[in-house]
Length: 241
Image (cartoon, rainbow, N blue to C red; front, side, top):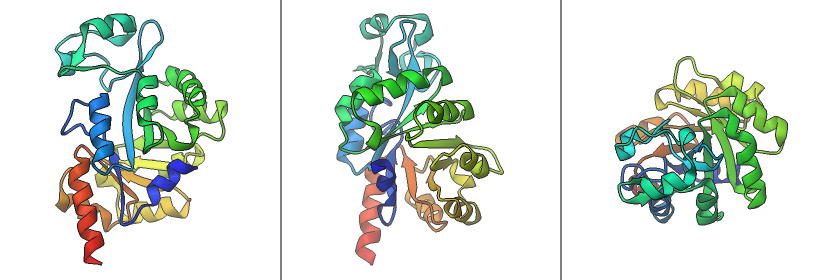
């Protein structure tokens, strides 16, 4: 799959976390644009559904942190969000808008925040012929199981943040990617993941010193809020060779 090829760039691949969360409003088209223009090989987004079953980009269960409004998308139609809510002046995009904007220029990780949205996500990916350059990722085993059951060819990734990690579980779920919190991306863990044919994407790495430390452990890709910073680091490492 083309998305897995995006994780083979040397010396490492860059995943823009919620686009470029540290620079632009997260999970917005502006954030995706910045990440694409500043070296990201893959952009990562979070997906939730509205009351009328539209899929929007949103990490939290409501808009309190981002827009100061205690509104859950599950309680309102997308038209309400479009009319009343912005993220630091940026509109809340739908998954379809994000896919059309990225349009295979880079890869895309779609994080499933609600397992009951998997089927709709896959339908949209098929509609836009986006399966080759996207992957469905989640903390939820059920989301990955459902995705694989509905579409065995889909690329999937298991996210986890607690020791000892979940590499075996990811392999049993037939995922192709593991996404550990960076402290779990040890050399031993990464070697084990690679021995099972899994790619390793560590998160969230926002400074050069930490990036170099994690890269020594044979990590394939680093997820970051600042794609431009890691892009500069990558160029430096290539020039040192």
